[in-house]
Image (cartoon, rainbow, N blue to C red):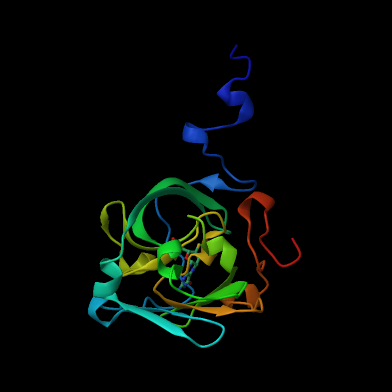
Length: 198
Ligand SMILES: Nc1nc2c(c(=O)[nH]1)N[C@H]1C(S)=C(S)[C@@H](COP(=O)(O)O)O[C@H]1N2
Ligand SMILES: [Mo]
């Protein structure tokens, strides 16, 4: 009967909503805690290290040979900007973790340049996370994390480690760079988990 108007529910195109405390932006701000590392694809390597020390490694060619996906998702930065329906191409963590035997519950993402961020392993599975290497149909620019970055759009964007070089799986939830500085260990934008204790 159409008694609930889109304006009333606050829902936008395709069901995209803005989490509490966020505003929309059309440009793509750059947020980096340090200088931009310039990693050439031929020197790039991605590794997954399990809790028993087993290492799985991909160089750029092996990574590019994996099945990739086109991804359209909203992204939400803890500094309050959100960008809707951003377009990426990348390799699903489901693909990268397919042959990795682990009982670990947590992952620490490590980046070229030293940045780290912690996530529960289950948040990297089931079509929720990618190692992305294209944005808007172009190779990912260095300032946005190229040649490749983590993309975990359901959590605040600081979890999407730029210049990602690997994951270390662990039984314990250790804290990454921003999490050690007082940001929330999980970072759900829908629950406004900005700072530790939120
Ligand atoms: N390696 C690394 N990854 C990072 C950061 C960083 O400083 N270094 N900043 C994080 C933060 S706080 C945000 S909001 C996003 C910003 O990504 P963008 O610069 O592409 O917008 O990257 C995240 N990933
Ligand atoms: Mo951020």
